[in-house]
Length: 250
Image (cartoon, rainbow, N blue to C red; front, side, top):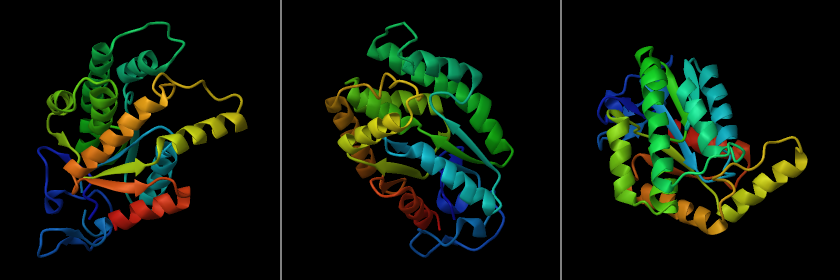
């Protein structure tokens, strides 16, 4: 079963109602997920996390196609953004040409405001319609970037994220693990290939030391939540990265 998130308090794998056609999987004697998540119908929220240049956008598109091909009703969304308000906040937060500066605390609260609206306007309605939700970033990114990268505090930011997300608790997250140097080089190569691409956003443009802190924070989160967060080697090809994720799902 694809135990990738729940609507309500944190669910065990067996309590998640699958939204895909097919059957088989479930829980073994030790209480661990086994088999194909398509084998039982589930409310699912799949979160993709990771640093810059990790390939989240590529993976989420490939994973969406894979799930749709297997009968899932999938919605893909992102943070910050996802809602009309969230898209405006995203532009304010990330667009270097926006022309407004703000401190780390204000940045954090803007991310959380976007998340609150995203949950209310997009995620809850999608779950109510029994859709599989794939989301590019969620609480873990806020803890890593603002809590550790900005130095606001790991536990402090985690508590605020929990308050805002309320009962939306992912049961499975994919952390796309890539060395920050390699991630930055990927971004640079892409910009060399596509001279019309947008400029680096405010977070992408941060110094390497900032990205190293964020990378370390994601690893700490993975150690703290070994059952929820699966570490994926994002230095590999996009085909191999997808295979790693599907191996976890199936």
